[in-house]
Length: 173
Image 1 (cartoon, helix red, strand yellow):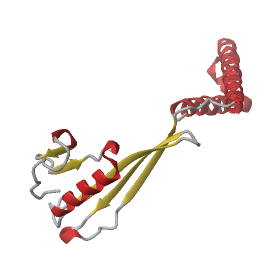
Image 2: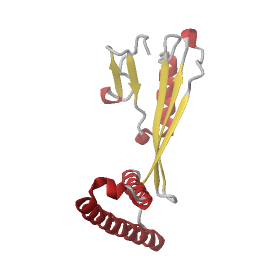
Image 3: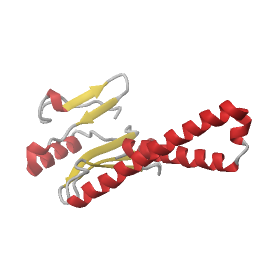
């Protein structure tokens, strides 16, 4: 928002209204504890003071929700890009990211965790066996002898896929 902003009066204090003059970015924070009535009043105040006007180029709305039944935190961000004169530019983006805060709660979840742990143990055993095979084959007939077998290529592709799966599973659990 490149227009002049009103004073902090009516916005709930300085800690809830931020303006970065170098970037021309104004941020308004709506707290849950102000309630529906307080949030509506603050929104009307923003509207009266023309917080979004014809000079506004982008409006981003971010919020988080928690679904207790699904045990998911979801973080949403909606971007509205405006062209000159206040028209929509058509590049509005909705981004939703969810995170399971309690991955192991039910007995079924622990059963899945046990299966995943067994997969990691078997994968580690396969990697150990393949490394020993590489060491013995390379010491006897060189690196060309090891890679001359199609099965060694397939074993290595299988192990790399398993390791990549474990890394991605841990990263995006």
